[in-house]
Length: 106
Image (cartoon, rainbow, N blue to C red; front, top):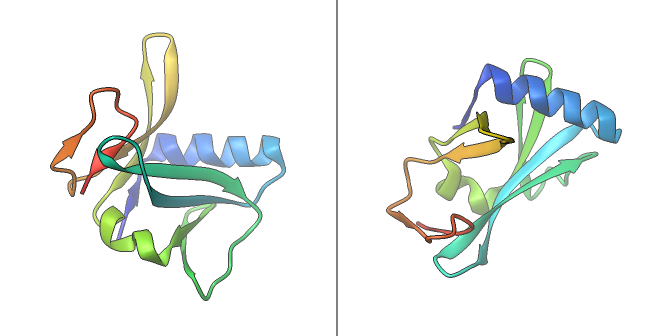
């Protein structure tokens, strides 16, 4: 369904531990100038009736079921770009994204 790089896994587990949370929540919401925006939150769990639970080594991820078709085949990475660092969504389902990089069109 989705892939998680080793660096994204390591950083997510580290950040979850610092925040006292147990899992990542991933999804997409209608927003921005291109149509959708990614959601990444630190969570203590999710409703399994409306979310799918995925396990990667020592990382648990919940994905909103409505977002699964939009995220299918995506890779979650953690990148270092100059002085900036953060999670990066590498999604093959994206035909376009806005100029500011905050929203995408699927």
